[in-house]
Amino acid sequence: MTMTTADPAAAPPEAPPPEAAAAVAAPARRGRLATFARGRWLRTIPGRIRAHVALVLAALVALLALLTVAVGNARDSVQTIGHDAGPQVVATSTLYFALSDMDAQVSNILLIGRQHDLGIGYDRTLQLYEQRRAEADAAAVQAAQLAGRDPALRQTVQDVLDGLGRYERLVGSAMQLNEQAGHPAGEAPKQVVDAHRQATDLMKLELLPKAYNITLDTGAHVRQAYETKRSAVLAGRDRVVAAGALTLLLLVVTQLYLARTFRRLLNPALVLATLGTVAFAGFGAGLLTAQAGHIKKAKEDGFDSVLSLSRARAISHNAFADESRYLLDPGRADTYEQTYLDKSLSVVYPDIGDKPLNLENYYAGLEAKVAPYRPDKGPEPFLGFFADAAGAASTAREAGAVQRTLRAYIVVQRDDQRMRSLATSGDRSGAIALRMGRTSGAIHDFDAYDAALGSLIAVHQDAFTKAIEDADGGLRGWKAVPPAAAVIALLIIAGVRPRLAEFR
Image (cartoon, rainbow, N blue to C red; front, side, top):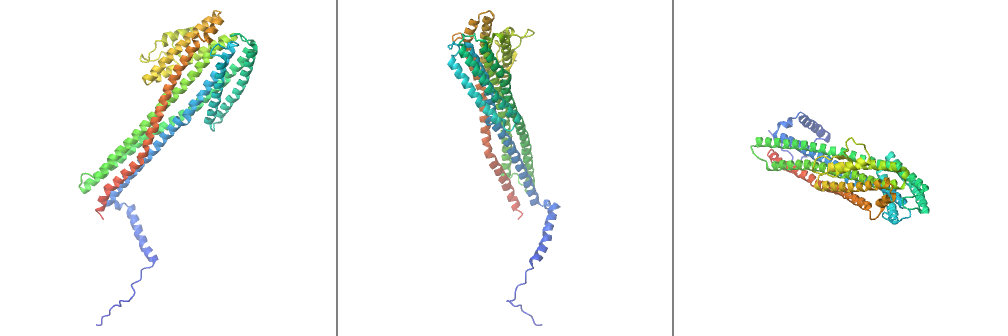
């Protein structure tokens, strides 16, 4: 038999065309997909390890995502209450105070007449009026900025600005008539009194209620944002705790599976990943809990208290001005006496039992219930703004500031009682000397009360500032969280990679 030898130079067999290769590969891919869909890969140890890792990493990603969202809500809340709307709303409360004190200075100017050395002096009183007018204009601008797209609030701000213009024209007329009359203190002619009535009625019936509504409405926006965001932070914390627990459970299950499969007690990388996850979830939950606490303190101990006490200060100044109106306009003395009582009751409302609600019983109630009050002796035997402040006092500094303010307030009320006693007995000049005299003590006592109240407001403002600073400081620690999650993920991968390598 003759054997045929292959020619070395013969060409190699041709590769199949691309279409044929694709036809062969397609069934192979479909087979792998079918195998994956039927879960056959889970029947192998590498497949099960990969499934464990995928579940753990997915839970870790979910934990990080939930924490990110919750921290975002906390940051928004701190920004709103501490840096944007919160301080602006507090600034709008200046509008009510500035308007109140403007009218108070006008009453003082008209009361002293040509005796320019009474009170704090004509020039200083006029200067203070101009200062309050500038403060009112600035606060109105703040309110307009806060109004944003709220048409009702913007209209209220515009109404206040328009009304302020009318008020200034009426005041200008009253002061001009007052200067022309050149009357003795407490003896303003009818045309001066009539012009004053128009101005003060406009202030009392239109401007002050609208100014209060501005602060009330803008404050409501802040409170709504606070409730929404704080609830979201607390809900986010609960989700973070749940996601952290799930991640830990999956890590423990993975380690148990590896220990049983490879007969090794510990996987150092996975142990570190587990400890890291505990720290990660614990840090996240703690951060969110602390943020909720800081936000609550800033809102309740700071924002709410500052707004409430600022209103008490404005009302106190307006009530003090009612004393001047009482002496300036005898025809409305009863009206101004009643408005003085109403304003005083809003500041401190003592328990007077079944007695008629009048100034005499009010004075007696202050001496019997408020003067002996001590912060550590149980619930407050009175209501009003200062009762709220006393009930909210959470530190010795706050409680001490409340007590000093109450004592100073009682001194002011004693001066008021003496002034009215002189006026009703027919000694109007003595009443005016007590109210406006530089050596009588009434103005000095009110200034001391105003300083004590200002210190109480400053205590709560400090609490607000401290809570916001603590919240900002806590949020700065967030920057380390995403890298920590990445390290945990790398530890998980590093822990299982040697085991997968054993099957290659």
